[in-house]
Image 1 (cartoon, rainbow, N blue to C red):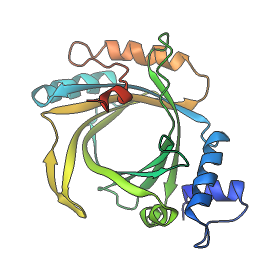
Image 2 (cartoon, rainbow, N blue to C red):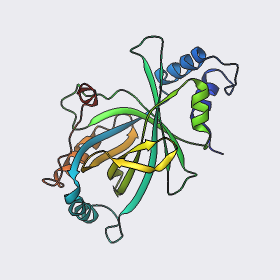
Image 3 (cartoon, helix red, strand yellow):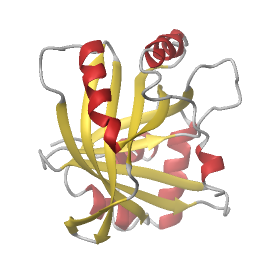
Image 4 (cartoon, rainbow, N blue to C red):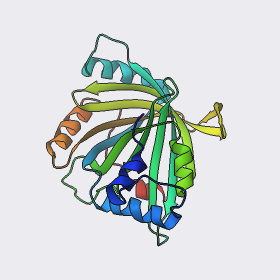
Length: 236
């Protein structure tokens, strides 16, 4: 069985797995210490953009020619993603985790932590944020609830993914779940597809940004991949 992400935190900082006697404040303290202690030694380099639905197939054809395994059909995915949050000691301190599982392979569950996006350095070609992905068992949602986390939002992502070396490209449609626990009752959010180019790598590999920017240039004018400041989007 895959080790639960929170077990990593507790074993690292308390020397034992979690139990019902641990309070919400203790859970918050342990998670915060783990994050500050550098338990997420990897960084995600990210560029994002969008393309209207009517141009999606043209982009898929372009990606199929540029990426690895060009002779094969694009690989499809359909994922259910949930965002869980817990407030810290101050209103500004919010700890969040993302749980994603495949609807094609329902035994595949992944818990992800991502840090604050580093956007201040204008010389960087991509967004950069610390991240940690851990495979978990299917009871991770129950566990997060017992820890004091609460579901903030959820959605379904359907689309295609490609690889170019260590770069990963996804072209996905985002759907709103109209009724909780009914993943067939969906509504598309926009008339476009989200396009993401990303690499997860150890800290300090700045050359990745240059490689990603060069690859993104080959997708113009179909799609403009750029650094997106998510904090500004939240103000609209």
